[in-house]
Image 1 (cartoon, rainbow, N blue to C red):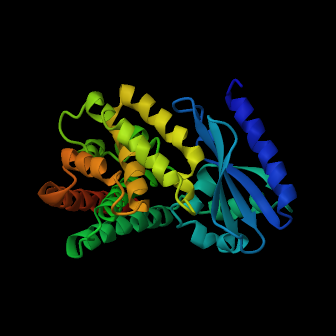
Image 2: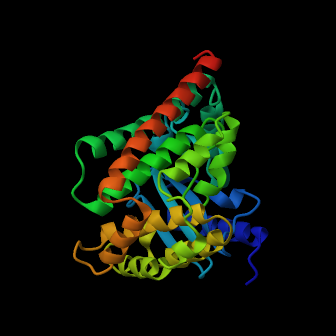
Image 3: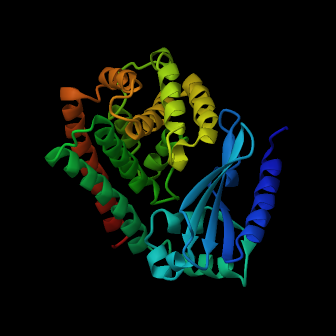
Length: 334
């Protein structure tokens, strides 16, 4: 099958029709994510992000559905109550931002999507709502730093997941001033654009310093690809595997990382490090896949004393984020 943007949109519409027949209590299905961009494929793979809005509480919040080696569905299920208060959506950095900035209806009953998007979109870009969304993410990042600084988690994978989440929230607090938050595969690729947009281009390089050693090369990362893939494979086989680690996601990660590593090694490293850490955190502490992950973290300066030094750098970076948001708020009279 030749994968084109048009073919992917056709699959999205067909899938929405299928789910509308399966779930009679659906108010809406809308499309979001990379399929609404000009270049949805990365490494020849993509997912189709669907949001199903139910009139009652859904049975589960997320599912991943295999379509082919190159394409899968990533479906979020929400209760309609999540969308009842437009004023809450206007300050929601994730659901609200994607609904307003990056969504297209595929199935809609009684104009639910049209009404909800319009209601949330009214005053969405008012400066006080913009800065509230941004500060929510910045506060989450600061809380993560505090938890690591004051009460270090004894589990190394859990600790690093908290650290990486802090980095994600810090950068996205800058991103949401102008767009919906960035997601995993394109996170490092696209963040420089938004750092530039707020007049702080150095924040992109500063973010890389928080997880990438000086001079880290494509060859340095390539040597970890096999143990990384092995960890993903092992985690995908555990009982009640989290959707992010489902077997159908493996090639989605692997091919994207290989493609990114050819041109932007930090972007590839981010994807590998996030997914690898998530995988070993899901595996038993004595699993043999833990050892190469520990070795990789040591090489990256993300363990022992170097990790404490990174925490100090993160503190300074978060200060810069908070100052940027304060300056932006002052500029627009908030």
